[in-house]
Image (tube, one colour):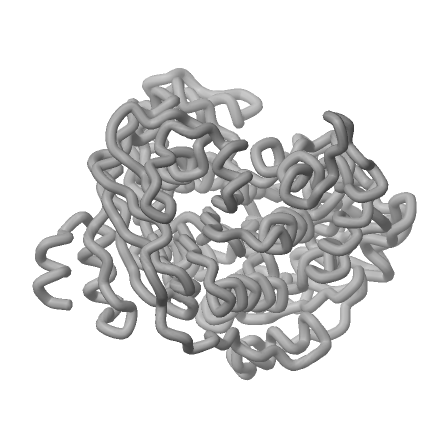
Length: 506
């Protein structure tokens, strides 16, 4: 391995009003190295990679790329220098083809026929086969990520930045991705890898830099550390796994019977005859690969969309025709996956966002007017109880890091003492400590008699906190199986739609 680092960062600093995002960050990435960047939410990871990619300019410090000063004023300059980035959120147009989406990310795309041939060649070479003529809206989440990766690989990058790349992938797709990354590493491409999945870090990465509150606090070989040790380096304290209250589930509190609903989007997934029962004090885990009807199921259960077919019973009463606000009044609360724009209004303050869903249940309304003092007080309680890193409740939701906003969104619902809580991707994009805290908060709710439905793509999460498990595939839900009876092989069968086989083997 070369002694000259591919990327050498020295003394990088970036401050915003009220917060120092990065403070004297110094580390190096070698050619052909998979380098993990670890840290809890708000540690400064996003700001750092934005500086490397030219989205943000540092206030102080220097960057060297292959021994040459590197200070990209915009992403175009970073790409031209050999730095590519696969973002956590896909930036694809669903109505366009794979090739058309790839072309939009290129400065000077070749003719369509030549580009299509190149996409086929590169995607097959790296074990990520793609049909350049397929419409992106028809692709699975894993295939969409392939489009993003191939778009980067066509630039022949020397450094590939990947932000939470496995958050929407099945275990099988993760294996394929890792094989691709190892091939890139063998060819000399360096990879800066950001993930909260610490076992993945230990399996894939050669080195790790850990940030805490904007500063580098540790460097290590992750293979020489346990996942718990890495988590403790990130948060500065030991972590305890979530513990269930252990009480037996009570009476049925929520029952879905033959719920069917068309998708609101041309690229969504309709629900097909969804049925399940949820008991008081129980956590029902619903797993599935992204794009199999998770968003639609939450909308159906929360009342965000009207059910054209089927019934939903709360304590024996059919609430299937009740809108979301009326369901909230009786204690059926929810938190959707998309936190910014769906769960929270980006330009509204945390106080205002607290009032959006908690005004009635927390007594913030008087003769039709909001008591903003009460709303602020409730927002402060959520911020304190869920360790939301923010200057205060007056800050706009969009100003928070993704993980901190997620903690606020989940905390806002948990602290309303729901009878039923339905959450989609509750710990998506949050660090190990925050994930453990959120999972414990849901188990604590269940211990008090709340029925909890957790829709998640994180199978480890579902196995850790769920009493029973069901799989969502193409808008259909399998029968529920006690989690103690499951193996990853059985779960894989269920996720793939082989529900009957999985049930027979359970």
